[in-house]
Length: 260
Image 1 (cartoon, rainbow, N blue to C red):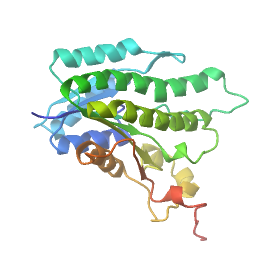
Image 2 (cartoon, rainbow, N blue to C red):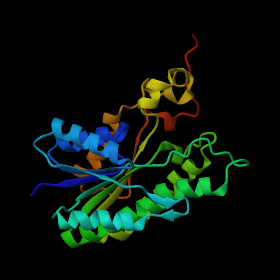
Image 3 (cartoon, rainbow, N blue to C red):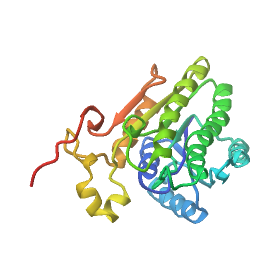
């Protein structure tokens, strides 16, 4: 029986790399994005590149408003998958609110709530619906796309950093509660990733300290996808674990910046 992976936030950047990794390994893939137009375009591109696997995209947003998770949309998503006979054996929680530019004395409280609700509460809602079906089918696995900022804070990202710390707690609690159902729950913690932002803002990324890693390079989306796939396909006896993919940034007290 062919395996299915559900990957959220998979129209751009790392999400694309994760979809392509699973499709290349023979998985059928369900993915989500916020924009109907972008989902349909990504779906067509994936199907063209991987004609031998089934690709299905859904446009879904996390929130109704900053204080309200759209639980009905999640319920409808899984109900539609049930109707199509699709069992999601692997859930990859890649979508996130980046929480950019939140300033403690200037931003409204709803800005923080929006990020926490997307990155923690909405993800829990997805886990709940997926795990119910995994339990019925005898097991499965969940992989969170977290961040090394769960341990190392960065400026003006208080909501994002808090959400990633909370997400790790959620991951561990779910791993404990779901282990008896043969459901594994783990997290990949990327550092800086070479995304579209890297290409469109070269001056910033040329000087940002986190690019100066012990191994001298930052991750591509494929590096992160490989780590996600490891948890999904190979880590049979691993749950509640974290795999950091940041070129060693987390281990250094400060970056060694070359003097030019």
